[in-house]
Length: 440
Image 1 (cartoon, rainbow, N blue to C red):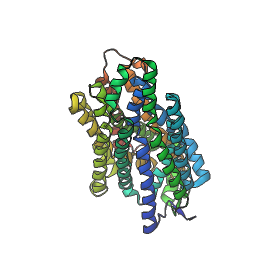
Image 2: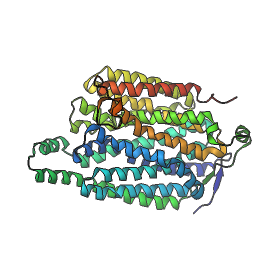
Image 3: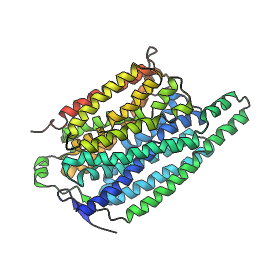
Image 4: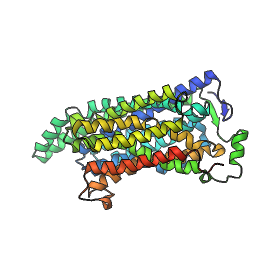
């Protein structure tokens, strides 16, 4: 096992750089696969656990709140373990969360399912707190957005595959099953049908757990070099001189809110699209494949990023264009109905694709020895994926935890518009001032 350490001012040589990128790309594939199963799980739990829309959206709440709770502890864990060992530990934690699905399915207990999702989110919080700054730092700063775009291709390719694979297993003949369950009068027979459906989720998550344990072992044994973010070059040391805590960097604190809004709109476009389709009267057999539509659009966006950054676009300009497209597609979905509305929501994936690759490097630029804790704060911002869908459901449902927002004159279409447009407007603001604020 290699003990090689790479400082911020001395990126790895080309061979080591390629190997490091390959390993990080594998981790980003895992992020995508595990995260984008949620869109399918929302619809699956809605049937199996007999939930309403607001309850089903607790899937994203449990999963993404883990980032908020555990991101800062993750930075301290990384200080103790280093980046590579921390990533391996993150994989093992995700595997544990996957195994919790076994007793949850046996008891058909939504609370236990949510616990498993929270544990998975905890593992991903550790994994992402390590891998995102690693991807930003291991090469030239000018191409950081391009590197993260390449990694995003791996992430969204996994995201496309994940709901297709899981839906084909757990939601096979979903509309027929929903009709049969609804028509069943005998409580015992209905329970049997729901238990059989719940059992479908066990095998996929056992396989996921086994694969993650194997990958954790291989990562631990890999030649991935360690990065010492406590080492600063002269310019970074000068910029951080006199700084006593990470909150003294405005580009970071504003960036945390930007990540919060970005992840919120990404989850709305990817995970809530199925619920939105249901609200339009489309069947589960149709809506179960809507999440891959969004992720395919995101994949196209990442390919555009790889082709254009930094040759034609920098991260800042790409973020400005992306935010404007987000506003336009959101308004277009509001003004449309049926499949046209779904197409515009899916196109939000194109608008969202280059946001994370632009925001993250902009927010941690110049943090020096504060990079780990700064990265942790940005990962906390992923909680936007927990909060914004709940705000959305609260506007039109009295059963949401945000029911104080309920307005009988607001339907799901208006709520979508009211959630998304303010988020994109803030992202647009950050795109213009994020690299300037607080700097001389």
